[in-house]
Length: 154
Image 1 (cartoon, rainbow, N blue to C red):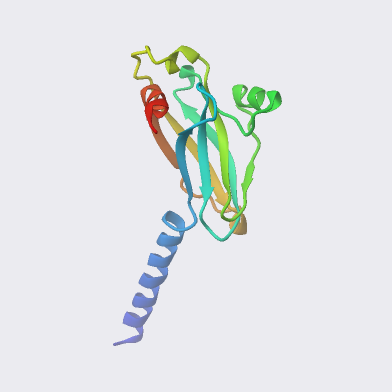
Image 2: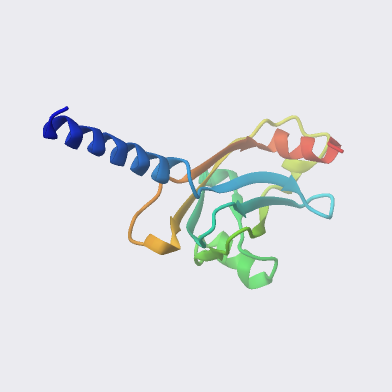
């Protein structure tokens, strides 16, 4: 084995580690779950890594559908979500945070509603050990129908 081959092997191993570190390790686990009350839903964020994570932005698409994610239950937090001015959220290691998710048209969550109403939640985040390095966002595809089905789940 020549020095060139050894260097290529080391480069390939380094590239594989970098790809795994960026795409697989330390990503927040995000899911939808129902709240304590009938018409409440939450975006549950779990940090499974050993380092803290910084959620820099949470966007929803399409914006006209009125799906918003708030950083808290207070009136100020809901207002910030409506005006899309959510501040950064720090998730400590092994912490789970439930962020309220709400729809501007509450009729979409009624049991009698037949609307599918798909939406996408895009969560941008960074590792706190390297905040300058952007990570690929976490994307959640869902719909108002799926949110209604959460009530029927046991």
